[in-house]
Length: 341
Image 1 (cartoon, rainbow, N blue to C red):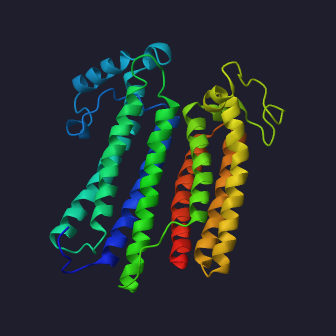
Image 2 (cartoon, rainbow, N blue to C red; image 1 turned 45 degrees about the vertical axis):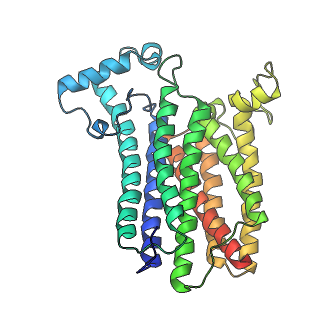
């Protein structure tokens, strides 16, 4: 970008925090979309014309006819009423609208700040990358939906995981950049925080748990057991299909993935607790307290999701709290990297 004439890092930081909240809202609606089996209700990707829902009875019937052609309707929802279709259509439409809103919330202010030459030196490429990531996320979302339109009655859990993890990566990038800009506003000579070796280890452990959670969601693996800490009265659940080999079971078997998601959560929680202790000792007590609070809430919600048989609103809160945990972890690791810098 051009030479900065009037850098406004504090304003940019507030803007990115607002976009981060929008991303969390998209994750929440995405969770509702998945739990209500609404994701395949819109069978086309129309980035422009798709902004408006059907506005007449004829238009609704046309959309419904398209839905009737896919396996989900023919094998699961055969005989669904138009009113019921409108219900699932709403959640998928809202999810897509919020995704577009995130894109606009990044692109329009970025263009305005760039024209006013208010983006601090070195941040233009990063802000542009975040905006581009939203566009990529939209393409990934359609790639995910397309996997369930021909031969399957649901979307690929691998593509669902890619979609969710990309959104969480965007969220982490927004939080990290907002924190960098907030520091720059207070100290114009400040350097960006760096990603420490410890931070990479934390991210890797958290990534595994988020991936297992996405696979659990995509395979409806939360429904295979509703007791805790045992699974159907066994520590290691019965019913795991090892016939395709260990890797196939780890990546595709709902019993094993549910089991791994349950118990890897303790490794992730311990990692977060160690991070909180380190931050506390280095003066980052706000971040440490937030980590403890969010980890405790997420673990509790995870257990409640299981023992309630995947109550929709508890499961949605579990997913939203997972997104909040990513944001808090990003802020915490930024604090760690700033200290090291």
